[in-house]
Length: 281
Image (cartoon, rainbow, N blue to C red; front, side, top):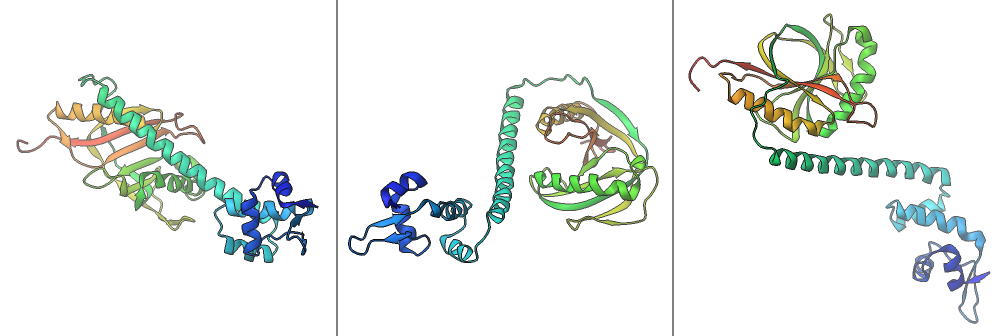
């Protein structure tokens, strides 16, 4: 048996924390000397204490922990909670990293001198194309990743992998937006698909036809999405110095989608449909 100070060293837990847990009936000494009031703890209590502290560090309230201790929640169940919490934290960290990358890309573009270098930009026409897609309002652009993952997993079973063209994202709306994004994600297909597909997340994939475009301005982005700022600016300068104007939503066509865990391993064609105005702008 150990007095509370000694046990705090072995358990690596503050005395004040042990006293508070005793006070609220969450974790009590193995024995209390009635004559002296000294609390005595045993190393046999370490598993229970570590389980309590693990639950607390996962953000669970002490009241909830008391109930869980009474229910004798297992270490395996706590490990499951830990994995869920770990995934949540990793997602938050990744979102913050993406945010910093956006800031860096914006600053890089701000430092770049304006240039009329239009290398890599082409003007072409696009034929009519069957398209198997889902269109919805996404809370933010990064949520599109989950939708894309579902599409890449389930659509090939319906359409046939050999029938699919490159993953294509169409950015609808009259203006760019980070939140509540009107976005369409799908695949050009070799033949029309009548059957609708309900994804696990609740989105419905349906067939439609992408209309032909007489004039489309296009360039290639290599690497992560933040590399697109330079390419969009380059397209904008080309349009501004031509007799064309934007006539529809931008498309991003993933010639090589990013591999798992490596957003830099990506090749994407950015397109804008353009037209010559019938009256002076």
